[in-house]
Length: 352
Image (cartoon, one colour):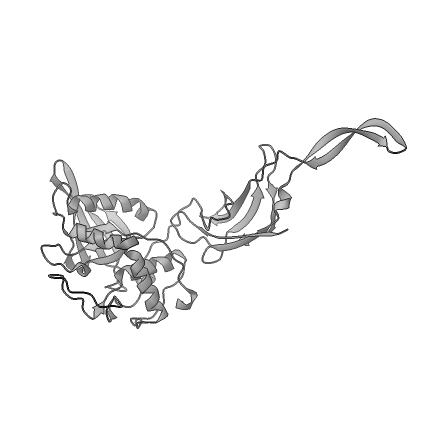
């Protein structure tokens, strides 16, 4: 009886793998050819999705068994030895997926165990696909009308009151990465989507996702706003630690959402004055100074937004990163940054 298996396939840096042939095999003992169970191979689409049809019954191996049986019953009961082809009871069912694809001009194959509940598989290669804000970012500015929360906030001393204009910087950063990873173009509108439209609802949901479970990211902003900048466990030190975490991801062409700490507690209690962006890559000059390229939803269609940072001593033999954001030639105060939680989501088709 035919069986069906569906999943998604990506490269090692999360970008959807397109045009990959997928077949199902059963692994045999060394020295034996694996059984091809495929009835209809799968081919990944633009989102990396595939469905393969296979027959598990093809996996049963057989062995030649010699038995003593009557020569020709009921006429001749003389014992004779004859060979029979029987199912091998020691044959284990070990299905796996085989991927066949072209990478860097060469035909490659990869395998992965077929696990019924696994929904995403990865190839070992990294697809070198840089993110450019002018090409992959949204075309409208991060400025939405109304209140972010659909209910009134109680008054807290020194906290201030949110304005009637709100931002979805975390949602826009995550959504731009969502579109990028599945090789889809973001909606080309230059107008801020009105409240209640499919795009605004999607960005709003991704904004809530960016806060993490139980608002852990908001708590992290609060914590970082209270840290001293240049102590051995302060903002600069932690920012350097965060950069070391994201550096390997950026090296693999995997953009990383960042939380930017713009203000400290001794300046304001307004947490929402901080910001979220998407780090898309970095360079390091001979003096070990960093330039981290950004997609900043506050500055759409610009490839010249960046963080410049350099190592500085912070005491007790420790080092940190002192940094500043630049929008073209204009500097902006930045106390530190950290990696935001991110789980990819396939954008709804209605947004295209």
